[in-house]
Length: 116
Image 1 (spheres, rainbow, N blue to C red):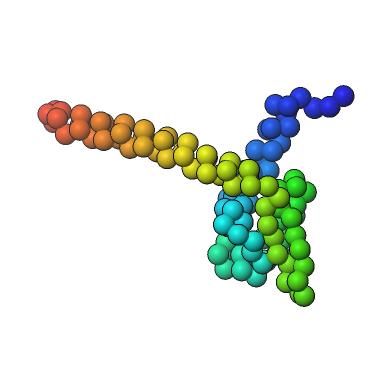
Image 2 (image 1 turned 180 degrees about the vertical axis):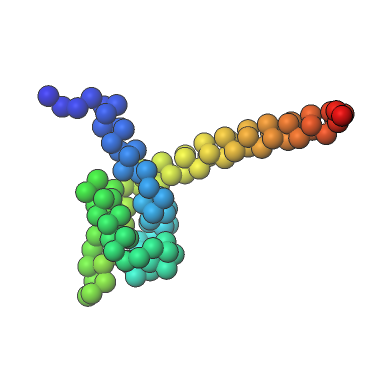
């Protein structure tokens, strides 16, 4: 018996649940990158980047190709880039709502008279 869809979705989002993996996917949303290009941008040790890339490979979110000694990574589907774009839109809305709330709280606090 196969796992319910909601369980598979949860596993998928767990795979995305690491800042390095998200940063790698964002980079690959722009274009294919060699590991050596990603290292200084992502800012982690080579072994850590390798671990995170392996997780993304096992989830079939990225594909590799070798050119000489360089290994290049790319997204397996453009929908991953679209998912990241949608997440950015959602987060922008959430943060805008929080900024509005903060502004309201600050305005209310400035109108209150200090109590002695």
